[in-house]
Image (cartoon, rainbow, N blue to C red; front, side, top):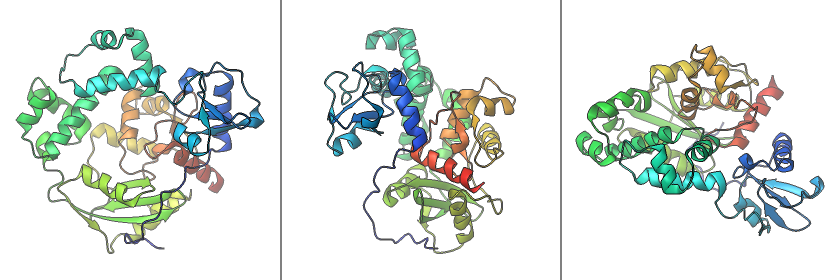
Length: 365
């Protein structure tokens, strides 16, 4: 097995093909003119060489003339032109509304910003804004505002700002406010996070897989990261962004057995042994991740089912956040968690990879 990190850089892999299952879902959404599907894919008509939003009011084409793309850029690279009626190349609808809201929230340092104020500024009703946020992000506006504020706080800390200055610049009313959230979202206290992994030694290896490149990073105690992607430099950069002061270097040897185990699981094979993990996480995150590891290979659970199995049926969004922050994909199989309606959503490494992982597990089971 070649796990060297010195491989010659290759071109970015082309977009993953649409699976038959995804195409069937896309066609159902197209026939229903479902506005909730806008922004998740576009449909292109071969006979007219035009691409549209799923909610386009134009007459539905014949199925045999339709092909699907996940992004408008993919459609345009194949020579398709945007529809002049639904204007799929322009950001509008729920996606556009949320993007404008995010721009405002990202600039705001007002910890007491209210939904009513935000809606008035955007010229929308509170209920419309709330529905758009849940549809596009799965979060309430306040939850996303807090996530953006904490992201700015983390960036300032990594840049070397003092805790006091970072608190002031991000609008936290007091140090207790961010300390309340530190265990839930940083996985450690701000003082510890500010060290950026100081003293931590991480070795990484990048290997080829059916899903593209796989980065496996570990300490001497266990696996700390499993990232999926197409660009080696981006994978390494992402690791460095989370631990800017850790000692990160390509691993010459030491955990080849762990890498082989990860690659075997990528191909849908059952675990051969339990991989040791070295993760910084909250108690709740660990509970969620442990529950995900109990989901049988090739099977799925909804976020609500996972929350109920933890004895916290109202913690659906908290479960979703724990899945989104899972640093060891494959080992903690967050790809086995789906939405209540059965649709695949919310996978950090791309829905096509989520589909492939589930398909590989089912075929190997």
